[in-house]
Length: 314
Image (cartoon, rainbow, N blue to C red; front, top):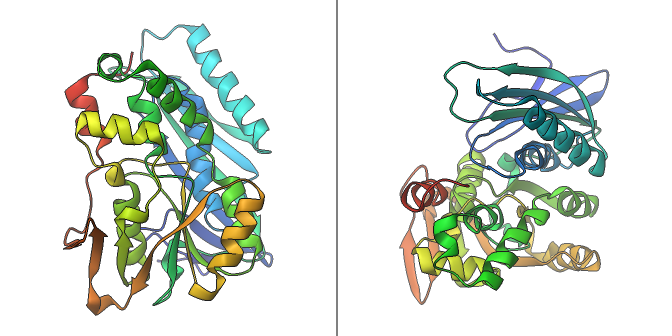
């Protein structure tokens, strides 16, 4: 039976839970990291913190569950834990507690993080309105590009300078500044970070949560040069590539310039890439002069087939 204190319950496309206690909203989100390889602690903290930040409330504490294979050396465990603590400190977050164990039959480490924050007001991915403009910060496919650029097999196919640029995209994984600045304008209706499924998958989630259709202007979606090159070489769609580090924002069309200007002041690119439609008008991608309907209720991320085809991370 639902608790009276639960304000936002689990829902498709909504990555946070919201409860109310003593007049304040408590926002939390949990995420597992399984495929990051290098800098898994960095990924774990940022991805979970990002989810909470999409509410407009910034996370201030973390709980960690870390599972390691039986052959893991103590030094490797300490390295991950140090990375988690350092990343949290950089973001102004404290690790409050958690659990660490050696797990039988586990093939690779799994790090699960719950991020928590509290505040007086919030938004969710379910709060977009009909005719809202859809904004995207930074560029698409940031996290996926940073992961694919470290594959040994990809290193044989792509220019080293492109790979180096792609690896550096890992440093763009946080959307906390993006969300904080946008939310502070008071003009944001809804936000959703780009995780599994990339721009298309996460926009689909946002539209399902808000019970709306959408029009995505595919040609307007910014792509880093390394994302373009790697996706072209591997023949994958950058708009379906996991993109932690970018933020989807819904706002009234008249407020687009204000939000774009505020983010630009902090040197964060923000681009108008579409609009939400009444639900009966459906979900569409406009690209290269064609208009394609999105009929799926979910979108497979391009990362996992690419990892399967081109090999695991070294």
